[in-house]
Image (tube, rainbow, N blue to C red; front, top):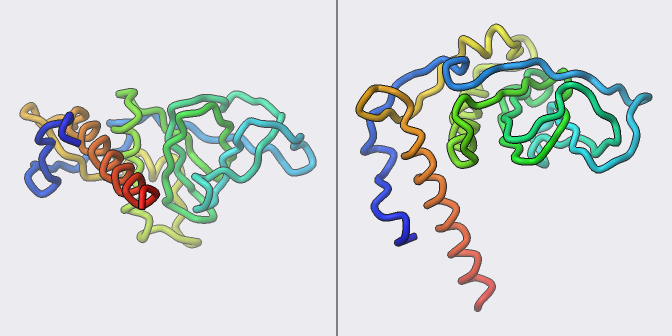
Length: 173
């Protein structure tokens, strides 16, 4: 934790609302119906709030195969967002977001910012591509008024280190 220096706190940062399409490219998923699915090792992302959105492991392939993306549930558990550093396929009940700045920790931060908006969606109000593009998320900004990706990265690294430190202390007892 000391190696990261003084990252700062969320409440010390200036924040600004950004449309999701400003920070991510958004694409639709593609269904692989149950009768078409073959067993395999590729994660198939569905509209679940569990297991990082992974519904199945499949042997199928399609144009949605990609890594370092964020999935957002547009149906089912609407509004949940997950970061996928591994190659995965994305079902049609999700949207695949490709962050414009590729960084694992900033992508996790953005996923959390999107998930914080989930309460306003539900069965009667789905999160389709058009609505998702115009959805605001609050992000910390740098001195130019742009998303502060360096802060997001360092903040999430610090959180990860704090969790790992607690885990190591717990198993060491």
